[in-house]
Length: 234
Image 1: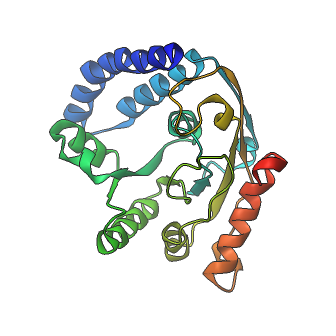
Image 2: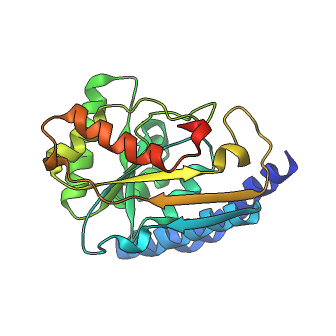
């Protein structure tokens, strides 16, 4: 528990220069790049500060000129601050709509093209997917956790359909991602953080247009993500 508290404290202290420097710069220049880089640096540094060693596989094979939809498994609170800084060069994400009620943070998130989502309301969830499609069409990557929640036992949960509407509507390729090791480091339901090794595998992009229907596309992405997991989690 002490290690987890120190990581949270690290992020809290690291947020000070991000807020003091990054926010004013963003509002003055109307550009989010500096704020994004600072926030991602603090997020990933916190992961390393917690004793997590990260191995990245397959990212170099991606075309930096392309816009992708990244889809990853999700088992731990540490997955987002570990994964999102690894997405080149920048990515949008779906964010709980409650965070958009915080005035300055809301404005910064909108400038960063983050998309509010309410998973409890089907109509607003559909509107969020449409908003995400507009972000992707502007050339900004999108990262989603298609299981919709963290897996408690580390095994892959069924994928939600919403993110695949996004891929089919925009025609952008999906990059399946497998995060392995974070279930041992910081599983759902436990506050204690343990040091350990994590592997983030970027699989080959999948063209949604190559599949006759959405169900087969979902199956292909699930298979790719599952292939990077240890046998006991498949």
